Length: 419
Image 1 (tube, rainbow, N blue to C red):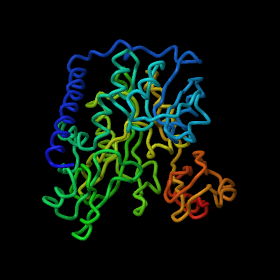
Image 2: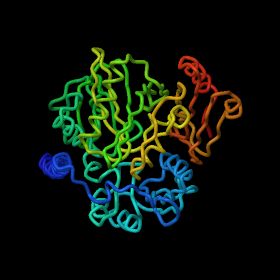
Image 3: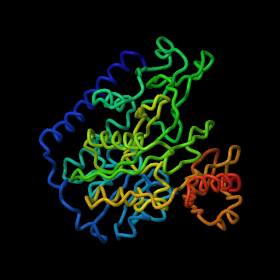
């Protein structure tokens, strides 16, 4: 992509983002919402209510498991015929999430449409919304969030603290202005640790992404935190206690997640308020995971957000009064939001495919682990494993966080996904 083409594409994206932000501003100024926004979805039971979900991965699978408790029928679409939702959904469609006609056709007979992955065709969702089908989270917000460049610009325009950044069209532009160390993130398409890399020195420049990206200063930080906030169409919000993540440096994926985060009360308060501020400024409906850096001087910087259930909320199934998946359902259906109170400290372990193994999954140590009190196993139904693929997660609960941490490390050492 040459510089002129990149500039044109950026201008188009910026115009669309401005339109999205103007829509958000309109809601803020006039508090005028579409007629369906403030209507309790009282008829959201039984087969006549068809909730459509774009994406059929593990997040959708866990959402369906909660929806079944309320007799809410979830219909899914995913390009993978063997996706985790395929065996649980009320109906399952194999199709592209990026193709306009496929997404529009899937959604036009649904009572409401939601997502479990943000890399979807926004234009199709906008058309569905214009025809009176509720879509949550709103397409105008997805347009901003799915492009990390537009996401960062939204933070800057709305006084949301974030790391300094610049936009780059390609690797050549990065070479021209960037000085190591810095972080390069692809603007679109990255997921599960992919599309992000740290450039520590000049020798790393040979590995630069050559697609449009954002370049951030490498910020020294003390902890990586996440706060999940839910917001329904009436503007009611509920916020979960802050969690803390430890990452697998090789896979760039969460290895352990601790709930609650080991931070002082003031930082906890500030983190929750920041997450609510982001959700309110977006005028967001649904569940929003706000990932943050706690810097060495005690400041909080928003890293990025996810407009769907998130890896940093899996422990809520056993560790909180209302799981993130039930909460997502409550929010998009405009039901009363559930309590976010922690019932017991917990540690979540991502169950990743072992490095160097590829093929039919074998769970080494499974029977030993399920005999341990306080250990809760969630397998995602993926038949094939490969290096660092998310195959499941384990949540460990205990009366004290230190006890849960100790048991979690034992589980990590015993339970392996091989082939």
